[in-house]
Image (cartoon, rainbow, N blue to C red; front, side):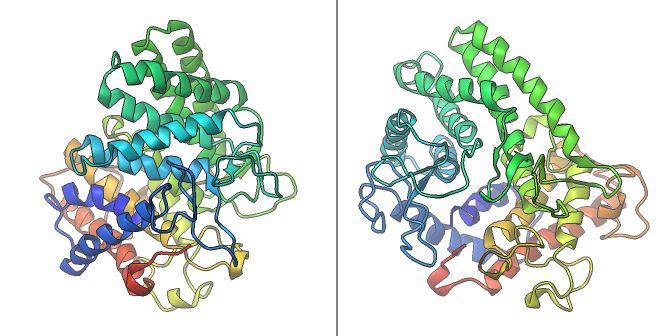
Amino acid sequence: MHWISYISLFSTALALVHPRQSTVDSFIASESSIAKAGVLANIGRNGSKDQGAASGVVIASPSTSNPDYVYAWTRDSSLVFKLLVDQYIGGRDTTLQTQIQNWVASQGRIQQVSNPSGTFNIDESAFTGAWGRPQRDGPALRATTMMTYGTSLGASNSYTTGTIWPYVKLDLDYVANNWNNTGYDLWEEVSGSSFFTIAVQHRALRQGAAFATAQGDSTRATTYTTQAANLLCFLQSFWNPTSNFASANVNGGSVVRSGLDANTILASIHTFDPAAGCDAVTFQPCSDAALANHKAVVDSFRGSLYTINSGIASNAAVGVGRYKEDSYYNGNPWYLCTLAAAEQLYDALYQWNKLGQIPVTSKSLAFFQQFSSSIAAGNYSSSSAEYSTITTGVKTFADGFVAIVKQYIGTNGALAE
């Protein structure tokens, strides 16, 4: 449920440059408060739907059957609190500090629980049931959230030095020492090497090197820098040059799929760096690689795969699922994935406005020709007619994904899986 409120953070600034459809604006405005309330309701110990969770623990869902999701995932809770931390340090909600520090304390306790990485009971005890584990993205995402909060407090702040850094370096050491071991993907189905996992691990170690330097730990900073470079090199091996997309998993054993997966779009938005421009190596949202991948993934859900997508134009938004071969609860589009497709495009629009130009390469050409068949490879400045055509088309495309979510939203604004 946190995804719709996450997307609203980007859309607020974006609206100043690229006004959206008024119906989409009003939906985001109303749904953001509903989504945030839903997130807070799932956080122990005072959340109205926390099912008795310990203080700071984020439950995945209050649902106890079909499916039973009353557990805590390191990945999910870290992504939830990354949003809340961003809101807090941005001054959008100054009431969140206690919640944030309760989560930090909870994660510090969970770190010491012997357990396959990924899933815990909501009382912070080990979960020993059958599940796809280890999940090696969790420590990286948790470190990123904690470092973001710690950086906002200041490198010499006693809470940063005495609480956050001891927790963060445990996670970053784990990532540095284990990134080249296989684990389960973010959908917890494929044991191998996941694009999403490798991408967020790279981000965490890059950020971690700077954080370690600020803490005076040059040895760790060097280690994190070295392993981040190795991760970035490995990330390039996921690219499929023939079909122009990033495969979601490699070394996946007997699992045979096309490789087209919202995993890669989610990786792009969760490693978005406004200072990185349209860098393709780090798969920035406006890069030629990420945009080509966006088209390939979205196109894989067109046609008759999902009934709601039938009859939709080839350059219009559709409901996006996890991957086209998905059979979990009969597959279907996911709110999370459909909104991620929108968010990548909003991020790209933000970057193009910041850069004052749009780079189009042979790799990304098919993406841009969705909005104008006459577009050719080249750089289009913000003063050009082509720039206006592209940004208008991309904005409409992005809004279309949000509009699909609006059309099929649950009762009272609920966004279930």
